Image (cartoon, rainbow, N blue to C red; front, side, top):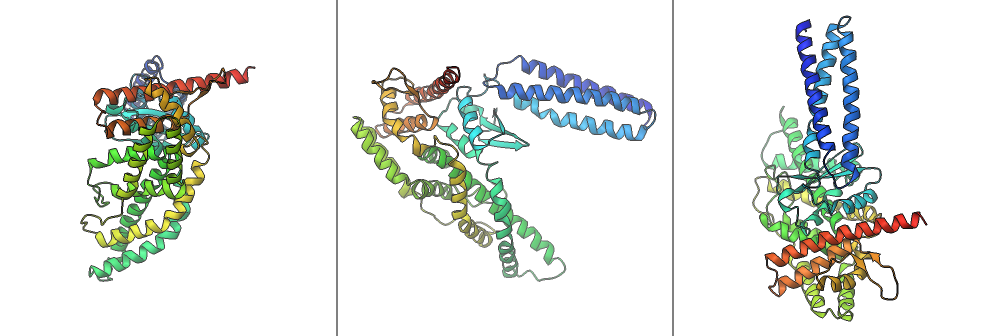
Length: 445
């Protein structure tokens, strides 16, 4: 690279770095719902200072090593360009972009499920929930269109388990891969493909397809189980509302990124709740507690809705698929891994003490507050001067039961739905504030 070319590229790199630092300064002036975004901005500023120092060193070294300096300059410029994606993520993480009342509670949940990992909540124009993760950092993307829909945000529980289940596949893949390879060989023979010079290439391509299908399918099912382990029936009801956007029996293909059929996902959630968490027994006990609290209508609708869900999701045949025979074998291996997967999820979820099975006793008290149009954020005790903050899972279960009752009685119009969402998000915010204040008070006694 000639001297004038190097100077132009160096000038351009410094210009882009200056633009990046100006964008960081502008973002730092905005309000964020937690300290995570501010810490990330501070980290990016430190990286910019290092980049600026590197550019100075590269410029000074150009006289003695023009080729090496040019290569280092191109590398530094590429690193700068790769950092620009943080700007959009941070831009969409402002308080006026995300459901800010939910963020602190999700961060507390994430701290227990993912210790030592910072979690940033941001939004996306896509009507879908997504997650990305790297070294000690997780970014959860919420659909901006549904930012006020507290019921849908239960799906955050699903996204939080994506970085968790990675460890499961480190050992499980080594067990399943040889079996899938044998299945692919049989599949190619059935198609009449001769074992010629190109057979191994075709086998590798077929095995790669089968492995992707197996890992993607089992990953989604495990993350569904993770949401069920934390939120219980709330996860089942939320996914039930999200599922009808597609054919329940749609086969996992490259076109839909190998997502498992919705009907199987719903059955997997329901099986986890019933088999692992003994959900049918706990729902029956909650029903009795609701009756004892004078909430017999809520009790009736709770039992009815849970029974309907548990009976509706039977495994059915997949819709037609060009690679149907191989897909069936892949899903047989998924079924073979399910017991180990359930145990893995159960162990990981047990780290979070306020999961749904441990907070059902809060529901009758919280429903009483909700009936008065009061955010169900605390557990009042008439015999005590102080009250406890409600749990995240207790609040979501309560609001879902109220919603189900309104749906069954055909009272859930748009105004009622918005009222419930506002009360849910407000309750989650108030409960987190109360919990933080109580912890501060205890620490400063």
